[in-house]
Image (cartoon, rainbow, N blue to C red; front, side, top):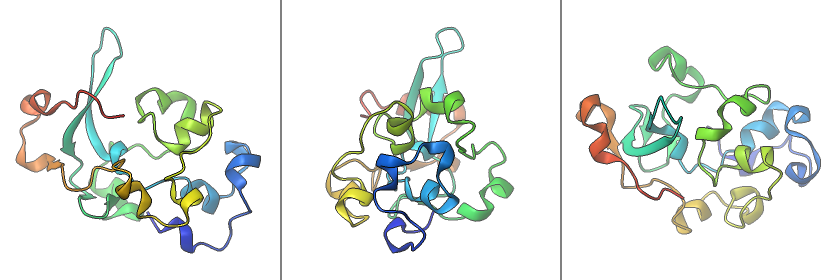
Length: 156
C-alpha cells in the first residue's frame, strides 16, 4: 500500500462526498489507514459467523510499517488474500475491523481524527494506538491449530 498522503489524484475530502462505488482507484486505495488489522489472521465460527482476530499476522505484513510488503503482487504469495473492491465491501465488511475506513464509510460513519486523510500524516494511526505495530507474530511461526491461543479479546 502506498502512502495516501503523497498522492495527487485525490479530490478534496472525497470520502465525505463521493460514494465508495464512485471513487477513483487512487481515492479507494487512500482510504486504507495503514493499521494492518485486516492482515491479521482471523478465526470464524461456522455456526455463528462470529469473527475473532488473532495476533497472528499474514506472512507479508511488515510489522513496523503495518503495510503489505508485496502489496501489488500479494495474490501470488497469498492466493486467499481478499482484494477489497467497492463491489465486494458488502460481503466482507462484517469481518473488517470496526475502525476500518472502508467499513466505516460503508456503514455511513465518519473517519476517525487519527486517520491519515484527516490528520495529514500516516503516523497518527500508530500514535493513536490503532495499528498492530510491534505486537504481531508471523504466521509461519505459529501452527494454524494454535491460532486460537492468540485470539485478541478486544481489537477495537
